[in-house]
Amino acid sequence: MKSIESLGNIKNKNIILRLDLNVPITNGKIIDTNRIDKVIPTLNFLIKKEAKVIIISHVGRPSGKIVKELSLEPVSLCIKSKIKKEVFLLKENIFNLKKEDIFKNSIDGLVLLENIRFYPEEEANDDKFSEKLASFGEIYVNDAFSCSHRDHASVSKITKYINSYSGIQINAEVNALKKITSEIKKPITCIIGGSKISSKINIIKNLIPRFNNIIIVGAMANNIFKYKGLKIGNSVYEKNIGKIINEIFSHAESNKCKIFFPKDVKVGKNLNDKSVEKEFVNIEDDDMILDVGPKTLVEIKKIIDNSSTILWNGPLGYFENENFSFGSSQVANYIANKGDKIFSVVGGGDTVALINSLNIKSKFNFVSTAGGAFLEFLEGKNLPGIKALS
Image (tube, rainbow, N blue to C red):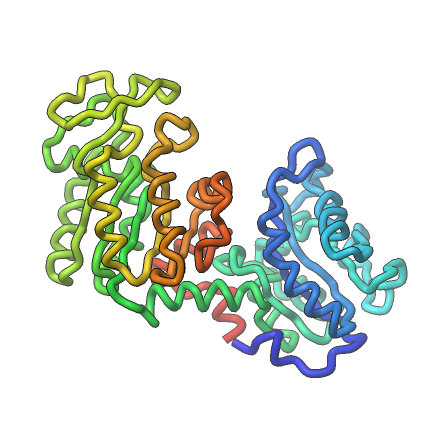
């Protein structure tokens, strides 16, 4: 990919900048600014270069219709407060816009087009719509890794009609993921959780030949307990996936990758209960497994001690209840305190929320705000947005 940082003189040039500003908004207020914070370096870079910037982004799923509650107005105000520059929200219909009119009401040369998903042509990856968007600028920059698994007009098709570059954030994301998939410093360990093992089977299978250890935690581990004939009480699990689990273990064995799962657990009668440590033999029919036990934590910490690289996607338990957050918090702090001894990459909404709540985000080498794109990259898929820039 050609990087934005390789650009020479772009003073007064129109730069079309695709960002992912899909932040949670409630009653007109932004709840989490993480995705906005991550693209500030790219915006500051373009401002310093005295370029004129046309930002394209979206919020929510308006399905090609104008939805007032999904306007980017709160986002424009948030960016303004962070860069101390006016960000003009351009609400005029894109099909009625001309290049020479885009900045006529802009004070600082920064324009944010209204929610691009208000147009059905965006998700349809429409050719004419892509060409229209491209006509507004001289250079296109994609700095929206978390949208790059979408084959949408402003993400992939637009690159057919304009000279295209990768942004600072997307470069950081791809470089971090390359370090855990191709430029690996071994031993490398993956801690992976979530509710369904079937949804992450392709990731696990893709990582097994590359990784030394895979630790399966969270509700995903319940499936392995069930497969191994251990008691799981009233815990969440998937039916009819014995074949998938057998596939994981046999694939791991043939690739000399060790699969770990919890040796002891903490249970409650419901999600709001207090936690009780239990061995599997003592689990009752109405118990729910909601966290890992102390023996498991000792084992995980030993594996971390012997790792040079860590990928973490998915908490160890139901961390939303502090009674079941101990395992996740312990592992988070243990990795964070390793400093330069480990290269650590964290991805997934729940895991990112956890380390944010502990205020240790800066102690990890890379924290990805991308969801689907992050997971599809780990599966080994070609992301349309990345492919279009290559």
